[in-house]
Length: 59
Image 1 (tube, rainbow, N blue to C red):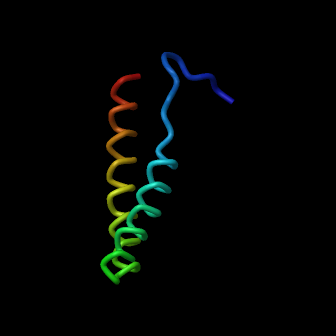
Image 2: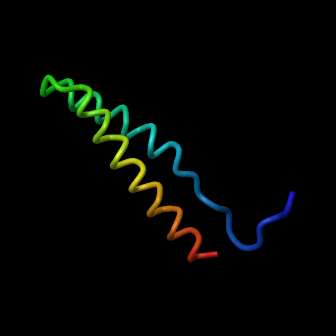
């Protein structure tokens, strides 16, 4: 394995997991848990991608 130079990279998996759960809870509140999960996935992937791009640019 190759060692990374610079600072430690950040993981986005926790962000995705949290937004999926939060989306399900919020969607359940409105009677639409499936739409909440899908919204959570979309938001989580967008945030994880943004974090990846910022981390990639940083190091």
